[in-house]
Image 1 (tube, rainbow, N blue to C red):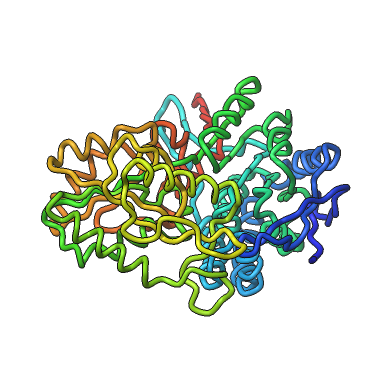
Image 2 (cartoon, rainbow, N blue to C red):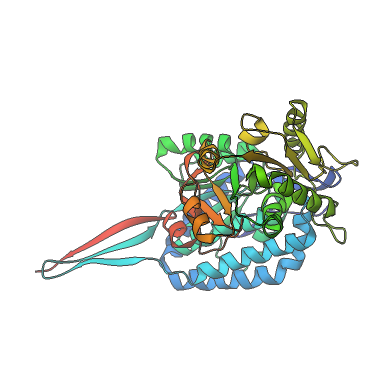
Length: 468
């Protein structure tokens, strides 16, 4: 059992209590993490509030700190990778890549311009629109990408001049706590505080009077509770929530050309990506060939402990999510769906689920209508493209989607009809720090990344200077 500490006011805090963190490949206790008390959270909020005035005043220092943090995280990727794998389950190479992606987000924001726009310059007045920091940011991150999700929030919040109190998921707190330890020498005390604990800790954070902005990534149900908690104090919020992301294959698509992209768009990280493909609509004439192609790929991937050589897919990260995926697949099969491959858990102590491709399933089944967030993909045949688009849009979700076709122009026209925040053409899951990412409908409020995400951590101020 390794020792992990929270970062509060620039210091290591062991916590007055602790909780178990399981390795999803074994369901055994991997380590224990600190359980942040109410008093310790109060100390973190006080430290963040005290650090805010000096931090907001020195933009050059903020940029230098982010650059240094990016370099340090890149150097530490090999160290953080095994920690991510042990608590989250993904293959080791992908875990290291996640840490490197976090470094990319920090590096990008170190040089991102904070907008400042002159809107009037004449004999009457000189008027500028500037972006000011909000104050203390409460950031709450999910368990599927613990380190990169943390960096996606830390980087723009700190660049804008805010200070941060961040809580990782209780399922995957360890690598994020390590990140806090790594950054202590770089950031002034109180600028970044990382605390760990149960869901109750998140509720305390969102209600805390010191917080002026909440950035949350997680489920729709929890996102609604966050919004409700923010409302009485009119805290600003960014919510990146769930998705039931469709892929629509057009009738001119080459199945061999698109199968790899669709498979990994659905099954990367064992399907545990909010914007991953959750359902595929394909013309009846191509349905059988695509199902076979996806099933062949599912049979070929090695599903095992992410620490093993050659691992391509790891376990489902949490036991509750493992139960949910199992339930949705069982229910679909009982209702008449057919598993072209997979169809249930794999033997062993961990949360391993066979990559599953379902056919003979339609809208109305929960595996199609809901977000499964796991390695199970329904493939639905269609006859009419307009109907397929309507079915893709007939959901409370609106995070992402993709169109697959031999004609990119035609695909782009269809993609423009999807009611979602990101629509990909002949690819899926491609993201970068400059690309805004957010959802329509129940998939979120606001966006992350790029100048648009940075604006979410700022308050607009109009500076009006009259001329005599």
